[in-house]
Amino acid sequence: MRFNDQFAGAQMPPEIGIADSPHRHNKKTECQDGYENPASCQERSHAWIINCIWDLQCVPVNHLTAGKMPAIRAGLNILKAQKLRRLLALLLAAMLFLHLMLAWHSRDLVRKGYADFTIFYSAGKMVRMGLGPRLYDEAKQYDVQQEFASGVIIRNGPLPYNHPPFEALVFVPFTFLPYFVAYLVWDFINLLILLGLPILLWPYIPILERASPLAWLLSALAFFPAFIDLLQGQDAIPLLLLFTMTFIALKKNADFTAGCWLGLGLFRFHLLLPLLFIFAVQKKWRAILAFLSVALALALISIATVGWGEAVHYPDYVWHVEQVMGRGAIVPADMPNLRGLLDTFLKGLFSKTIITGIVILASIGLLLFLAKLWNRTSTGMRLDLGFSAAVIVTVLVSYHAFAYDLLLLLLPILLLGQYTWSSGPARRPGFLVPALILFVSPIHMLLWFRYGQLNLMALLLLWWLWEISRETLAGNLLADEPYGSPR
Image 1 (cartoon, rainbow, N blue to C red):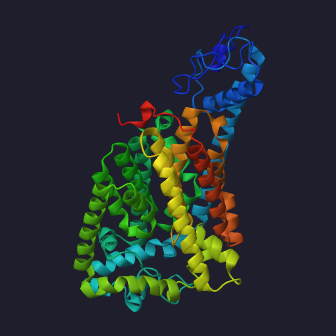
Image 2 (cartoon, one colour):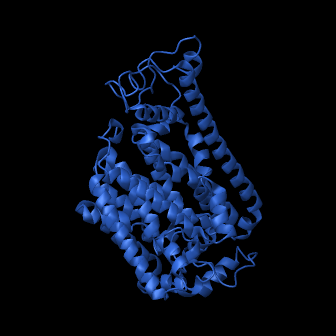
Image 3 (cartoon, helix red, strand yellow):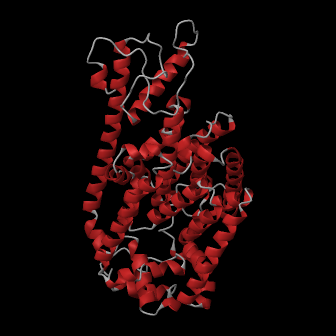
């Protein structure tokens, strides 16, 4: 029953609740006469408000009150829900408009070759030209980039391609197009991936069915990490797809398939450690076997692309970029992870070696903490919490993490949104507060562009992880729900 129908007459239905909500109560509620816990009544009323944001089709069920709630109070609750929903829509619209303005302002810079897509296009072009054995030659990289990005005046050398050799093959077809056209085609492919994600996740996150794929796409584009990934022409969106497919495979108990999907993400190998660690702790040997099989195949492809010598040289080159070429471009203070946070706060107090050791110890501690959480959240609906924690830890313990890497957090936002909707938001409101903050683009822009302190985002992620741990370690997990199984 919709809002207008409910208030067409003078009387409210005796009981109101949420249509098709899995969080129902068949017994008497604390709001009935004779019960002495008004706080619980208020809490459930607040939960109902937020649930109505997801679904305003409220119908009479035995869920909230037992007929004593005044019609005016119920009406105000519905109005609050509608107002919150409108405010959320307004926030997303404002962020999307801001991103469109930034994209328009940056169009000439992108056309000239300032975007990170330069490294992928140049790598693909070198492989196409038969220069695979010189893929990590700095001078040759710069020569190739000058062919299409000579208008970039801030570089005296190449924007280094430091990704694995096999990824360069993906961009060979793009080199048959002019640089800017190739950039637009790559972004279009990424938009299609974003558009398809809710379709893949519908059986596991039913709240996605309440919005069209287009509405979801616009909401995703209102997320600053997604915008900056598209603006830079980066590859975080394909990685998000692979994380999504890994999650779906785990929900189906298809460990081998999960390992295969995760292995395909080796083009960003530093972001795979936490899930691989979980596979080992949980003795998911089939997943590890699949991961290693894919890794071996990609290694052979890399050797065939650049030769044995260049493939063996690749780790040294990555370290060289980190130590020499990356100065001024790879700044820990701009990393929203433990490394960025600890390096920023401990710099000047300890040597670089000691700080690195502290980062390693803190990362190991977070991985062990994640393993403890996963043991309590490894099946059914509870896997949503465990996987969300794993993705958050992935960003925190990564050696490299930039603004666009926060795009991976879209998956925890959706999973925790579904969990909160199913359990009642008053249960753990901290689940969604960090997500809401992440959607406020000016915070990202101030921390990154103005103050150069994007590392402070790590504090937000640690808070988010703490909220998940409180839910899991307190033993308050919901029983498995039907939506947690594949349809």
